[in-house]
Image (cartoon, rainbow, N blue to C red):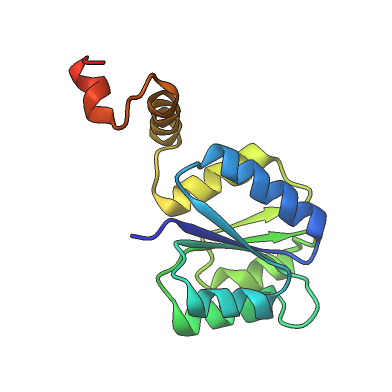
Length: 154
């Protein structure tokens, strides 16, 4: 299993903020970013991804193009849509395109996070506990792996 999440958005501020925020919440995952659908398709073609989170409205290949590319090439990869224009027509268009979730911009990061962990099938609490344990192991006096911590030796 790979641990790559691909974020695609032409808004650099959203892309950087969301990327940084997810990195702090999902420390065992690599967050890859693309500023448009074409870059996103190139990344999907070169690196296995576990999840795609994409904006719908972008210049060049838009989010619908990303969905089409994913459906044609990587149909088992879950995909979450972010959009500032979530109308009933847009919801209807997305209904048959195998989209895991759709969130409207501006969105609450926690809500998006719940969709992300749901699509990935990970337990956010377990990931946080493992990340915390890893930081303890890295910061402890010469401890190198969890087996030393678990056995109680120092």
